[in-house]
Length: 137
Ligand code: DAT
Ligand code: MG
Image (tube, rainbow, N blue to C red; front, top):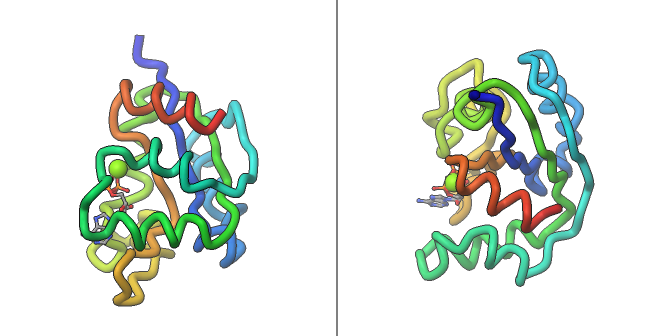
């Protein structure tokens, strides 16, 4: 039984740069099913729950301010090993070193600011996925 669900966010940089369709097309082309999708304005409270593991880190406040800067598209995906699979499609956290062929590697921009504008979020485990889906939906 390896059909999983994961939470994907298209972050404000992705929405602002009108890459929502491009990113969703890559996800669908891989064969993952979109089971929920909504564009939302996150609140500070929601982000504090979502990023609870990062509260107190030096990049936390700039990260939250960035996530408050515009709408986010929240998506629930379903598919075979989709948690690992989406993170593989997304590429590593830092867009400068993310591999070509990945969303972050091909499209992400690190402007040298405090927060990397790395376009997407993907849950990193079954437990995080369940927790994050319940926060956003
Ligand atoms: P990921 O989004 O790849 O799961 P993460 O959970 O470690 O990465 O961090 C969450 C977000 O915080 C990440 O997408 C961008 C930002 N971030 C992480 N590490 C950072 C750092 N060292 N400097 C600036 N921003 C960082
Ligand atoms: Mg993470």
